[in-house]
Each structure stands twice: as structure tokens, then as C-alpha cells.
Length: 393
Ligand SMILES: [Zn+2]
Ligand SMILES: [Zn+2]
Image 1 (spheres, rainbow, N blue to C red):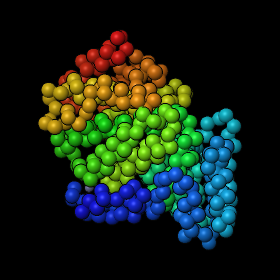
Image 2: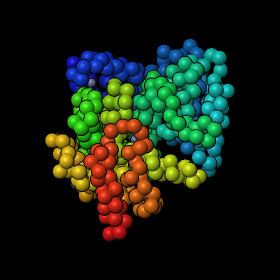
Image 3: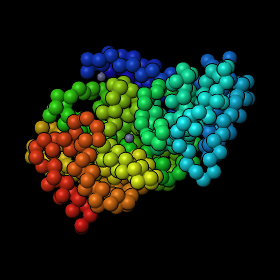
Image 4: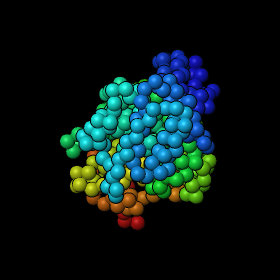
């Protein structure tokens, strides 16, 4: 029972067990290698698909930092390799019909595996296409920017609208710390912000269990707690791109990904802080602007949600408040890791901020501290107070 807790992250693939929560869990990713020099493991990981052609997908940036090396290694080891470069220049690649269609066109009849070299759009696009064409894919991570490497959803665009259809899990994950240290600062900050968000995600989950009778898996809570500890212990070294700290961040993000994959819900990694982030993102997209990175917004939203826990303290079920540090402590943590910690720093207007506190609970039908405040009749007063505290002082 709960054997997965005795394994290192690289040992977790293909683990199946009966859990103390009463469910049977299965983590079906086949291979993970997170370490210095992990790219060298790529040919071994791809070995079962050597009979067919390997389509390697990258853009200009990811080609330089990892794609070139991946292609060289595969060719040296006798693989039949085809390359697909998205030459986007200064434009941002969007995971829309054009990008997805291009990947489908380059998939030959004898393609047996795709390799996504990238962190965001390339990963999501290859994940989506291979799920529909029923091919396995391996992702070579180029930034520790999010927890979606071992998640089965793929955020993509259809006719201008973003949605996140279920795709499938990767066959393998390569996380080479020598590659991660080339990631842009804002992507590192995003990954760190997404990890900081797990603080309120876990507190929110506990509240939902106690106030709303929701399901909980203690094994997954433990995995997320472990992920936070690994990441936060070395986060002071993230701004200087220390490879070990970056590896720890990717390991933390991957552990929460494992937790989500075990229970097939995002609860272990996402609570009210993600609802605020999604509310802000939708507003930016509606106005035709490029939103901030997901994780940067999540990080900024986390001390805001901590303030909700502070304001509701007298009504919280026993043991919930202890799971959420003060908003000052969380702001200090974000600063240690070099990430933004106040909404003004990422250009969230006072008006949008106030609106998000009032309506954020409606972003998705999931119980949270914001729903709790609403149910207790305090939402408006809290929204006014937090907005004034942050914007007027
Ligand atoms: Zn997230
Ligand atoms: Zn469980």
C-alpha cells in the first residue's frame, strides 16, 4: 500500500498500487530521467520504437539548447530521424489548427514515435496530435516552467478559443539540468510560482474535505508536500540558475504531476489560487493581450488566497488554518525564488483584481476557500478589504 512514497521520482514510472484512500492508483508513464546529462538517456528510452521513423519537433530556441543534441544522439544510435522545425522568428507559437495540422502533415505512415523538444506549446501540440494519432511521444523538457509534463490534458486553441481536451500521458520525460539552466528567467519564475501555489491548493483541498465532504488521497497530499519541500529548500539559488536548484524545481513539478495522474484530478496541485489566475488570464485573452505566464500568475495569487484563509480563520474547520502560512511568509518565499509577489507587478488592474475576488469562485465548479467565504456571507467584505490592503497601502 502507498509503495510509491518509497520511490525516487525517477523510479515512479509504471507504478501501480492499492492506496490507503481506498482506490487503486496507476502511474502509466514508462520512463523518466531527471538529472544532469539526462539527454544521454534518450536513445535508450526510444529503443522500443526503433523499427519506425522518429519525428523530432522543436522551434528555433529549443533546437539550439536541446533539439540539435537530441537529433545527433538518435542518429549516432542508428535511428531513422525526421526533423520538424517551427521557424517562428519573433512570433509566439500558438497551439492552433495551423500548428497541429503541420505536425500531422509531417507524421509519415511509418512514424513510430514523436519527440517534443520544448516546455509549453511544443509539448502541448505534440501531446495532442499523438493522442489522436495513437502514437507514443517523449518530451525533452527545456524549462522547469509548469507541472504539465506528466499530465494528460493539452491546452490548445480551436477557432480562436482556448480549451483543454484530454489527450494522453507522455511515454517518457527527459529533464536534463544542463538544459534547464538555459531556460529564460520568466519561465523559471513561472515554474516556481506554480509550486508556491501548491501551498494554498493543499489547504483548499483539506477545507473541501472537511467543509464539503470531498474525496482526499493522503498519498497524493504527501507527494505534493514532498514536492514543496524539495523546491523551497533550494529556491534561493533559482535566481542564479543553479542547476541543482533547477533540477529540484523540475522534480517538484513532476512529483505534483504524478500526484495528479494518480487521482486523475488536479486537486493535489490546484486550488483557489488557480481560479484567480484563470480569471485574470481570460480577461487578458478577451482583450486580445498576451497574458502573463500561468505560473507567475499562480504565484501572485497564492498570498491573496492566504489572506482569505486569514479572514475566515474564526470559521475554518479544525486543522485547516495550520496548513496555510501567513500571506507575508508566502510573499517572502516568492521573493526568495525571484518571482513577482504582488498583482501590481504583473499589471493586474485594481478593478480586475477586485472583480476576480468576487467572481473567481465561479471559474469552475469546485469547492474552495472563496466558495466557503461566499457561503458564509463574507465574500464582498473580504474582497473590499484585501483589495484596499494591496492597492491602497
Ligand atoms: Zn498550475
Ligand atoms: Zn490514494
